[in-house]
Amino acid sequence: MLKPFKKKLVSLAMMGALLMSNFGYSESRAHSDERKEMEPIKAYCIDFNWGVGRKAGFARPGEYKGADPKAHVAWHKAVNANVIQTFAVSCNGYAWYKSKLIPEQPGLMHDFLTEVVKLGHAEGMKVMGYFCIGANSRWGKENPELSYGTPSSRHIPYTDEYLAFLSASITDAIKTTGMDGFMIDWVWMPNRKTTNGKWIDAEKKLYQQLMGESFPGEDKLSKEKDLAYGRKAIDRCWAAIRKAAKGADPDQIVWLTTNKVRSPLVVNSKMYREVDWFMGEAGKLEEIQSAKSMVGKHTRMLTCLSDFGGGNASRDVPEAIEAGVGLYGYAKPSFSLKNATIGLDGIFPKQLTELGGNGKRIAALARAYGGKSMDSIWKDGEFVEPENPLPFRLELRKRSVRHSQDYGRVDVGDKSSTVVVKSNIQKGRAMLTRVAKTWPETIAVRILRDKKKKPKPYPPEFRVANGKIGVSITQKEEVTVVAGKMEAEMSIKTFWKKEFLNSDQPKFPIEVETVKASVTDDAVEIVLPVEITKSNPSTICFEWGIDGDVF
Image (cartoon, rainbow, N blue to C red):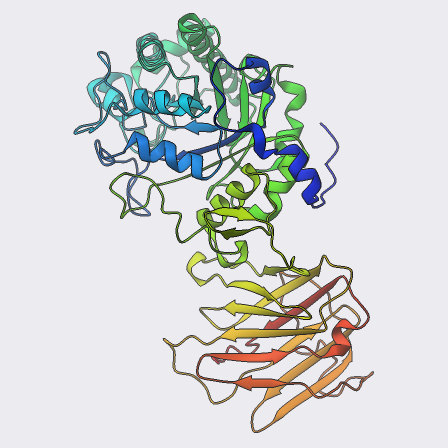
């Protein structure tokens, strides 16, 4: 296993060198293939696998039938991607191109994949398809004796019949559409939930075929034998996939995504050694780095940004760039867009801290893919570096429930900056990390009031610290300030205890200048005491709404 990489932010100059925006999309496909292979992988997928709604499961056949090839290529160009990952056959089992072998998505308005390939190539982009190896709802329904049913989960054992169908599907998609390669997903064993762990006869037969002995029964099957069988089944499946791909096109790129990089079913497998692109879906860079010793010398590594992995895009994207690892993200189409893309008007103009979830990930990737810093701003239809760079970075405490997450931005003036926070539950925590040589002369914190809730006549406690001293600020009839040496930990995760200054009478009190605080119908605003910044600390933490009161 490789040693853990050292985490640090990438400088703008380094990022620019690593993600040169002059890779350009005007290059023809005839341009040097060798140079194209050396370009950083900048990929995205508008995900047709999953239906609308949090618990929708696989998309209904034809749910995204209006997907427009021109709009999709334009979307990927807008986010500065050089790889479009879309679909040959999605999990519901229907094709995204005019196939003579696989039924197309019902009502499909365009020969989608074939047209995306043509348009994407004209823009200098690679276009990758997709096959879900462990699930295919349509095929499972048509072959019930070879499937564990068709929930939104893995349900297919890798029988001779299925591998023959899968191989034919891969060959057909490559020869019909001209795609550059394809992602393979869910290369795992079936979970057998629909049979309460009982094996169907077709898989018992496959066990005997691969293991050279009769299936012993679920209650007698040892973990060692089950693992050995699983590895053999996956190895055989991989051999069929690779043979079909390279047989149809020797230059075809096979891209493996795995959500369990270190699973004993696949660790040190032939698939790992032979696959062209290898991606860890969980988005854990250390985990992906640790797999380098298991893949081939030709294999390119990618990390994934998605709801599945979570993470922090403003940190994860620069770290992946510095590590030389390709980038990829995916999200479902916007419900309101009939062309089945994702709206960008509400994403690009905002700072990363004003966004959450896939919106933040798309914003971070678009900046990095264009060779810009995470602090770049949207101006006149492009990302540009700000005239007044941010003097500090804002990080808001992550909440377990997404819809209650706090968001914010930093407004920069010549000698002052304002942190504007939008908080749904009016209790939160933030950290400011200095990136300039010194802090601004004045830092104000403006916490927007939640107008949906009945406002209280005064703000609850607001506390700020720099690792050495802390200040507690409340306002009823007048502003009350308590300041002293700070003995609590500086962390974005954990709220300070009430006694972070050793009660209302600190053992080591300090004097601070008059603190400015105001309350309006729209917000509470507090100007941080100069004593907090004058020692030029590296970080400052503040928290508000300590008692859960609403501003």
